[in-house]
Amino acid sequence: MSRSSSSASFFPHVRALAVAITAAALIAQGMWLLTRDDIEQNERHKVTAVLAKMYAPLEGTNWAASSLEIPAPDGSRVRWVRLDDATQVFVLSPWLSPAGYNGPLSLVVVAGRDARPIAVRVTSHRETPGIGDQFAHDDGRWLGQFEGMTAAQIRNASAVLNDQGFDIMTGATVTSQAIGEGVASALEFVHEFEQRYLRRR
Image 1 (cartoon, rainbow, N blue to C red):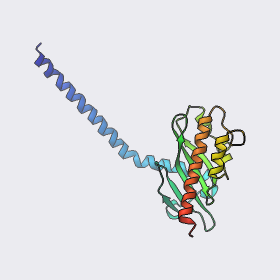
Image 2: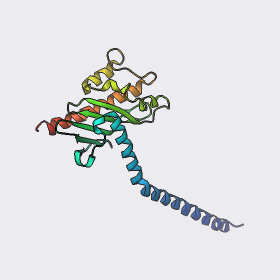
Image 3: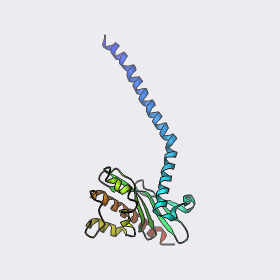
Image 4: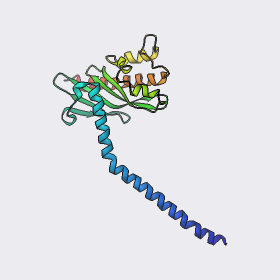
């Protein structure tokens, strides 16, 4: 068989493979576009259910009518929610913590007007299975220690660890510190927003 005839029989296979790969990519893109809204809606429902468990007054909140989205860094989302004339809270969801052992963790932080956390949850992570899951299924037992603390208190507690600081989850020092830093950065964001826009009210 000559070289030209083997080349001629090879190129149709390459073309067919290229067409198949392109078609698969287009189908995957189309499926993502078709399901994107459903995925986002499911994620919103999941977060709404988590928020209602974290802070009961948020249950049944009409987000469109009673909240304002605030631009936030790094793909995080922040909403200022006015529940009534006396109660306003910040919902930071997701708020990305600094890197844990295997990357950033996604947090939900509900903070009051005093820039102190009312409730904190971990909604997703890439930590070692079993270790990271301790935080994701915590329901406020370990995470509850941050409630009522200022950002400065959390940062100071993170520096001294168990001595006079917050408790570290056994076997997860790096993850514990990342969550503490994430909560502190969320509170600093809230404090800065309050100083800039709400103190004038």
